[in-house]
Each structure stands twice: as C-alpha cells, then as structure tokens.
Length: 184
Length: 76
Image 1 (spheres, chains in turn yellow, cyan):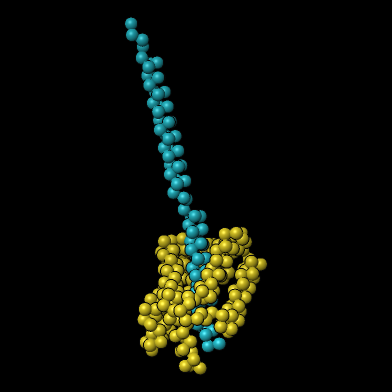
Image 2 (cartoon, chains in turn red, brown):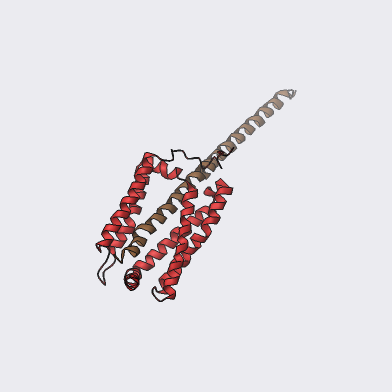
C-alpha cells in the first residue's frame, strides 16, 4: 500500500529518466555554462545610452528555442505534457527571494519603480506556490482549472513586467554592479 | 565577475521560470481538453440530436395522422 500512487493523473506517461529528459537537462546546463562564460567576459554589458540587446537576446533565445521545440519536436512536446506539475509548482517557491529586491530598495540600491513591482510580484508567486501545490495534491483536476491557469498567467505577467521595467530603465545592471563592487 | 550574479537573473532564472509557467499552462490546456469536450463539438452534436428528434417526432405525427385517416370510415 505504501507504493500506491497519489493519483492517476500524475502517473507519467514517459519514463522518469528518458532520453529527451537528459537532452533538456543538458540544454539547461549548457545554457548556464554559456551565460557564465559570456558574463565573465562582459558580453552582456552594453555601453551607456545603448539598449541592452545582449541581455534581451539572452532572455528571448531560450524561450524561443523552447516554443519552437514544443511546436516541432514531438518527443519534447510529450515530455513537457508529462512533466510533474508538483515539481514545477514547487520550484516557483524560490521566487520568495524577490524579497531581496525590496531589501536593495530599502538601502537605496534599486529604484522603487523597479523593486516594488518586481519584488512584490515574485513574493506573491513564491508565497502562493505551496498553496497551489497543496491544491494539486488534494485535487489533481486542479491542474485543468481556471484558478491554476490564472496563477500561472500572473507569474508570467510579473516576470514580463519586471523584465520590461528593468530593461527600459536600465537600472539593474549598473546599480547591481556598483553594489557587488562595494561588497567585494 | 562582479556582474555575473545580476546577469544570471535576466538571462537564466527569468527564462527558466517563464518556461516552467509555460509548461504548466500547456499541461493545463492539454488536461482541459481531455476532461472537457470542445464547445463547438457539443453544440454540433446537440443540434444533430435536436434535428434527429424533430425528424422522428414529425415522422411519428405523420404516421399517426395517416393511421387516423385510414381508420376513419369513408363518408357516404
């Protein structure tokens, strides 16, 4: 009885460790390594007055690859549709770290116009993530409900607004740089 | 190297969280399509059933009328 699954909805259709899963993990690791290398070389630093195109490409490239792969690669689509939603929702709890934006704003490092919407939005998603996870555990059909969709759309909206404000005001990079130079 | 932590946020963490949200939305749509029939399909079937019922009822009424007519004795 201990091995009884919680619900039939969450039984994965694909094996837990499939070939496409390894490819996806390798992609995320390779992308992280690339960001480390390019970031260490200063490739994301745009000259003053110029738009942060490198940052924008760094943001949009993985998203575009994901959407393109989802549309065109059938195994990837099946992997996405069979991924464990409990894990996906649980990871979002890390966005409670958006509290750091408010802390930096309190110390005058970040402007309030960026810190408040980005920080509060991230914290809202991070705080409500355990509640959504509990709802998924209690009622697996919650994944197809309007409230679940609304929660995810709110998370998307928060990230979009935060990135838009950060890029448009160009506040994040120079100010964070100054902060870390002060700390180190 | 001091810029690395702040570069990671918009170029790695934000896309990762966006992809996770999109994955959840794709699954929600997929599961919704499994549990609920599309409205236009239901409407078409509803209309088809309604038309079928109307056809059957008209046919039945016509048959009853013809039976009544047949049962009525011809007037002199």
